[in-house]
Image (cartoon, rainbow, N blue to C red; front, side):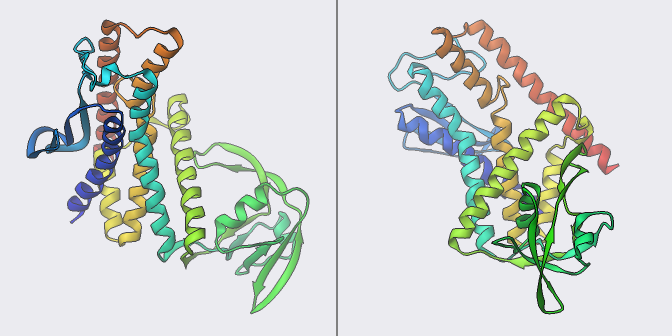
Length: 348
């Protein structure tokens, strides 16, 4: 069953990515020869409205083949008016951005439905207090439930983190204790902590940690806010993760491959539809971010080529484009090999 969900989720995400490219290409009048989910031999294929739609044997991506676009041989262009190669750089960038953009939009939609459904979040119940920190000194106790800070109602732990970290001066914290609401004035102080990448940071804290999870769902308006915040958070974390990997803060051993993705989706499938939506949204953001990297074989690399053309008013030479694209595929295959190697090491 895990393999089934892996194939469904990954194919679903790839389909939306390629549908983004396809839709904007057709909007600009570009003929699309082939729309494929997967690579390699075609398992299912149907010609419909000028495009061959396929499901191929290797379900690790997909592609849209537009008229006049030949990545490995840019010299094979077309001068027909329905050709990708005849578009302005700005329209080409629009097509290239549409794939990652579709992934971000899909993630937002998935997070929106998660917000509407009952799901687990870290509760605002206090599970631990540091004795030398402002929370303890002000009178907070273990098992207190924080219900409001200043004039903002608190439902989950994420609601209070941002308020404390950005506070200026004292904050008024209201807690539920033994059925009674009690107000306390707390002076957050700057202390050393660690971010999600294990780096030491300085931030305002009161010295408390959460004590469990709670089930919650949102109304329509709050679900939109929840989806927006989750999409921004996921995008930021993944962008930062790539940066930390490049700079060496995150070890190359943390890179995962198709086995890791399959395991995460399989585990989520055992927890229900909400978990599947959450993982699918996170992977969708991941696909969007990674495809924006300036690697020649990816959308981000092609965007860089078009920006070069806009700035210099001339296109890169076909020879340079071919060499850079081949180099990009070498980088991608290297990353895929590294991910697979790390996955196998984790298994054994």
